[in-house]
Length: 124
Image 1 (cartoon, rainbow, N blue to C red):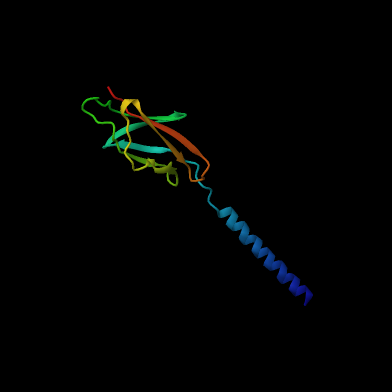
Image 2 (cartoon, helix red, strand yellow):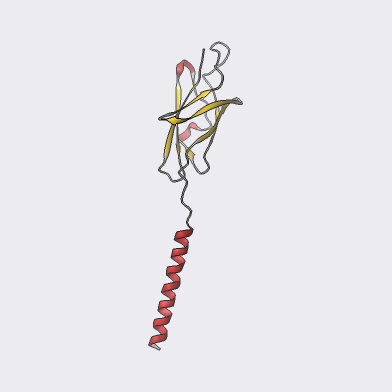
């Protein structure tokens, strides 16, 4: 009886360790991607840089000071899957007049990796 209970105890321990090992190795690492992949305003694409701190974002077109209102621009921002955009900046209009810029911080799915972006309208 002692040998059977010891065998059973060892079998249960082995099964438990094998299950833990499987779940540990099957666990998906969280992504470190934290990119702004697209930035548009009123259908106009803005250029997102790839290097720098902060990374620069600027429109392809130059806004005309008198005919374009840059004090209330609503960007549509696409970021890496699983990442998040800082506080309430997403989905809000921003004032880009008088050379103002808006800083966006994207945090990766891992919750640690971040990138800082600064958007500025070009106005003549």
